[in-house]
Image (cartoon, rainbow, N blue to C red):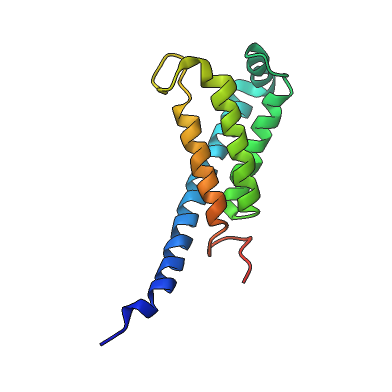
Length: 141
């Protein structure tokens, strides 16, 4: 008979690696796409204009776009996952507060409520706690 308690830590570590990989790649793709939409569809000047329209300095628009693109690529690769995830959580909380806060909780409200960006911020904090995972460029062996 095999003692399964011996394999529980290895299984937990493997599951954490799988979870980190899924979260890193999926959120990395979402951030990359979101940043590229700002770059290619809304344009840097249009993004800056939007940020100004909600009372923020216009320069934050292109900086957010850059953070989303570079952060998305870093997450996909698994480079500095903890730091990038925490930085992007801050970006998401800013979006929730400044971009969606006045629209209430539910994201389906006109103007989009703050629930969705806060959910993504919590997801990013969870990813920061998990770290790079096994299948990443930043993995220390």
